[in-house]
Image (cartoon, rainbow, N blue to C red; front, side, top):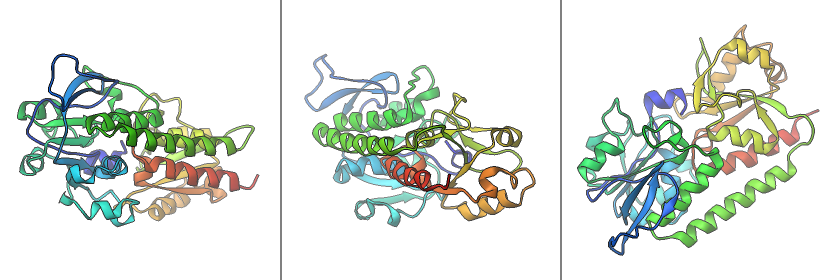
Length: 332
């Protein structure tokens, strides 16, 4: 996750008092005499039985967007939205956000979940869920609250890690949530639509040598950027570019300015936070002696990626379509 997110926010959350929590790996029916409304779905690599949630809590835009895109608004009690997230009024699902409660504008915590009487929390590992802050799937299990982890964040989930390419992780989440809420047909329609849109961008991607791209998340002494395990890597690749740090088997990670300079990026993607405007980051790159001579900076080749297009959620494909059009429009 972006560095600022690890300090000020993260994924989605929902909570409730029922059974074990759930999130994660491949889907399988519970064949051990479970009640008819219960289904077993992997939480990262751990099979977990779920009952149909009625008071889900989502942490951040990516989590809420996944639920809303599946038509699950009536099952969502509310959301937690830290400052890094852009206003929900800018979301394609703004009308759905308006139908549920905003529970907090701070980090996800156990008190919010308990007070909401939630029966599912949707969030990411080391973002919404955190050992340091005392809210983990294991802790919620003991409280009888179900949980769902974004597959993209399962890369380093303790004991039950799961590693998938970011777009594949997005599709997996939608399919798993479809199973949990018994809207499998809707989930398949949504996934098929996203895959079709992504394929259309790939088909139009520029041919030949891929343009080197640097994603700038944050940081002045050392930059925070996207490794191979987060959505921007797939956005860059599918659009026809090459993430200069795609060789790092990491999610959001810190690198050196020397490594950025050596890679000579032709394009810089700026991740636009609600509390860290893109223009401020662009101004820094233009003024800093470490970056002002980069090919992308000298050519003014900046592309602004919305925060919710960069974290795991359906808007990843919006970001892909926009970046694909940007790359195709670059002067050769």
